[in-house]
Image (spheres, rainbow, N blue to C red):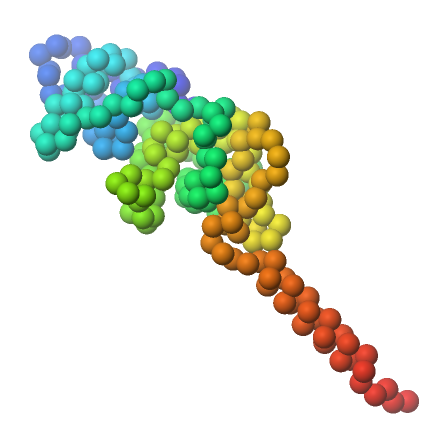
Length: 224
């Protein structure tokens, strides 16, 4: 799913008299409504919509629509996060929730030959909106925000598709989780690290039971 192309449905309305509708296509306007509830980063909204609407106009319309609900937009400063940043998915808790988002987005097999990938521009964005809203419904927030913001989720999807982020599978619990290619040093499974699965203890217990069973068989009297 490549979201950097221009989407014809996201063209601005030709008439300047339309102050309350941004796009020629109602679906694009609906997606804009959904996006401004998830992120206030204008450049990301423009990129995902593939629109030629000016960023300033996007900001003004975002302020107007959210202002109707008494919401004052707080826009982040700076250029935004990248997968190359040291803070990108740097904690086990973040990588665990990123693994959940990855599974929701690409399916249980993960990205690859058998993954579910939407190639239609608009439906691809619909998938992102649906997946992230499901994540918000099913994962408790940290304070008043989600541990994985929508911007990070968008970077995760792009990074997996461009292979800047690879998928690794834990040899103990089989959890598939994302790892940035430039990461140096050992990578611990986020599921084992955060969910107290104690797989090492389980394996040790199973092995001790197997050993005890074999010893008991060796001690059985042999006949014949």
